Length: 215
Length: 240
Figure 1 (spheres, rainbow over the protein chains, first blue to last red):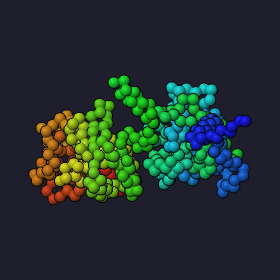
Figure 2: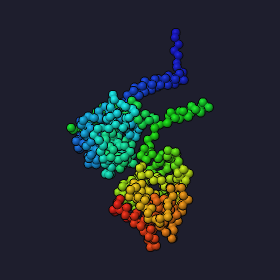
Figure 3: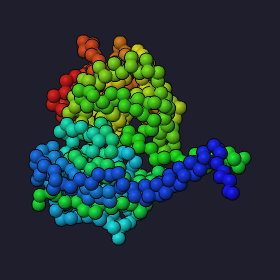
Figure 4: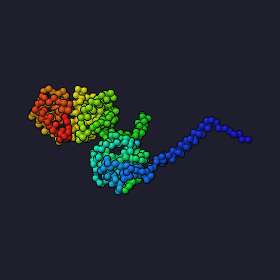
């Protein structure tokens, strides 16, 4: 006759602990691997926009980021941005400067293209179209999701690089030229690759595509 | 010993990139926003901790108690509100940094203007007697630096008597007195005699706080005319 041995209380606790540990281990393995797991991907065709001519769709690793452009605030900057979008210049361009929970910056068309990255010069590249004047006089709230043109130390040096802020930056008003605001999909930008010790990213994430909703 | 090294190394490794917007904009560390909702769009920042600047780290300033900061801010704001947003834009002044015991190479100073970075650092504990005047004095240095050609030092120097010569720099002289002379004789204060630029700044600051124009000597009258004329070239709406 085989005697049935009951597990002691401490054995049960250990078993539960091991099972929980295993669940966490395998669960986190999949969660860590897929950084876009909980990021909602917005389909612009299913959204109604007041002014579709000023809607730009930035497609990144974790989905679509839908940006409303403000030509009334910065006519020249928006014109340049649309020009570069329409020539597909931003496709395969790196998010070369990323500060966690603060901003992502991309748009170096000369040194930031996939397959032609130049880590020594990235951030200094030009579009070949020349610089445009800063448009900083119209009041604008640089709150989370705002999109602006990057520039050098001096005003009137905007070219093709742009940034999107991931937190409110009130000091940016009158410093940077606003282009627009992210209205859907900011979460996808929060997953863009960053480094802990540097603003400039080694092996960065890239823009898949940037298109106007209406050509 | 190796344990200490390990701790230091791990601190370095785990130190994250700081998202310091103010530092990125004006290259001064340890600052926080004090007030940015101002009528002329000046942004007031204060030292949260002491900071050191310069290639040789020779500029130092310290944080203040909140009570003193609040008290001095009212005075500073009242004075700087006299400059319009348009004027400030023309002279390239946007950020006012408030701190105390400001010094360059261990020499105490009331302010450090930097028109390139659009910044004026102000020592909020500088001499109480002349505090308001000193604010305008430092603003003039921003104006002067932004419009060097207008405020030509050679032209200015010729207003003085032939025998007079300014010192090489404002810190290479012991002429530092800020009391206003009763007998002006071409200069408003002892400090005016240090350099042409300081002389101009003294005239400007006295005009801003309301100089008694009844008993002026001919040299000062020319200097005042020079300052007023050139300010109107920068901004025709500027009121002294």
